[in-house]
Image 1 (cartoon, rainbow, N blue to C red):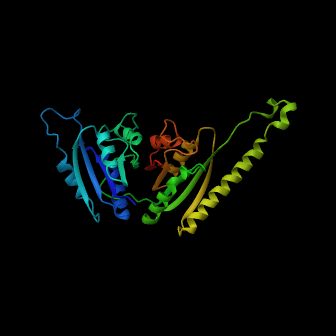
Image 2: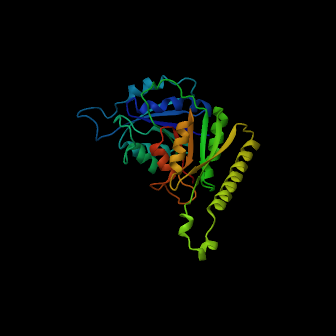
Image 3: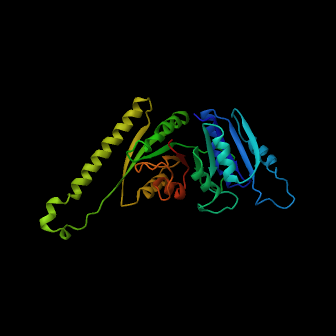
Length: 294
């Protein structure tokens, strides 16, 4: 499934917050792990060695059990550039990292290493919001939430989600967010034109019916593949609230992973600021697996 899991670390407990997710994942997909420490020339103290970090990675490597191989790599350069280049050098590499590191900030920062990797890499990316908990154990995942919008591009993440669900014995929940459209109060519509204005209730009922059929067909497809624990959920939102609904659902679903494509219905072949996926990545407190369809 993955040829390698690349794990960037910066020496902080915050960056190590991804490790509880990497350990069971690497074991399940039988992928080697590469722990990466990048010495940033801009942050190196005077007269310090540009190779520091080796002992740190050695200590963390000892916490991996049952993994085929754990490689330790120390590099010198711009962290984001090194991460992107190393991942691109080997097809099938998954990058797994936290949304922030030693700065200890509790919010996503535009221009941060994670932000640059997110926008600069074509590899699959697992982003984890770190906590103050122990990074020495394993995260007990139970559910994969898969938001869809009806487009073929958004559905590119489904095979990855099903493979992970099969290997990690997880439940799959297919999610579709339907946005209400407000036409204004009835008394604002002139009688002469009322026959040309669509009935909001009828439109909503028709839209719900179409989405229900779509989700049911996708669930049936996955059941046919031998995946018994698959369900679907239709959420309603006001205009522009799809990301908020997904984030709220993730918050209410314990031990979950959100798996999304970087673009969907728009068909835009790049990551764009303000997309639903980007909003989920930026504001969700739950781990997010991001897939950029090729």
